[in-house]
Length: 361
Image (cartoon, rainbow, N blue to C red; front, top):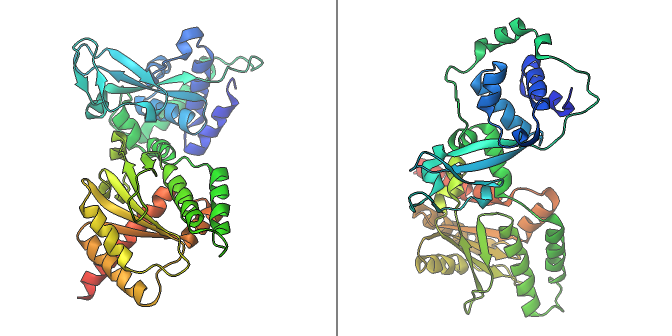
């Protein structure tokens, strides 16, 4: 094959005949034709179903990294002309000006005008034996189309791309981009700060550092550790990017604009009153329904009982106070989970406790 990587498409239930056609089609592209490729062009040229063509391009980009995805922003006003293009979904701004009309618009309010095209990243193998499209057994290929989805998509836009499971995987990778080397250093600093000889200031900074770093791995959290109150409160500004509407993560429906965090690196167990204090802070901030209490130790004894009761009561009022302790930081170090999903699990746990409480009444 001209592109041996394409053999891996068999793992995603793409039939061999289509893979051969795609391999030949790509190999014949020259110069600028290798950029801005549209699945519909391949479908027409090689008599391939449009839906299958969309799938094979998406797989070649997301799974094989043979292609580069382009997000082309087209004007919803004048002749649908292309305004600009981005290679990374995180780079697409929430407002773009149409050069023909001068109007500002949010591309994600017109996601049918965000067209997906592809650039070829790999050159064909020049030593590959020549294979003509006529060598393909077309009868076998067409017989394999009996299970094709009935509606053909002649254009691949953002809505189609992000709504399928492959596109969702691409977004999830964009959501969480960790630097585990930096995390390990911050974790070691946290552990070193537990020694009794360490100053109170260093204890606070060590916990604050790893807390901010962990949140910064979530790409739509803009973390600002410079805003402090007398209680060492960190104000974390959260910006929800518009394309997250395609991802079904409960925390995204809860977070509005801000998350307030409190860091308590103390030798003793954290008193439950900090749940109430953080909830009170949320009431004073616009567009905020989530608070995170970062601490060295967990609640224990009566404080644990009171803290859980308070968390459930606030969650019932749609205010979510999450607890994140040294044990959680250790879990992250050992397992490298997606911290966004870890926070999401904590919110879901509160929701499930509320359901169980209602069922027991």
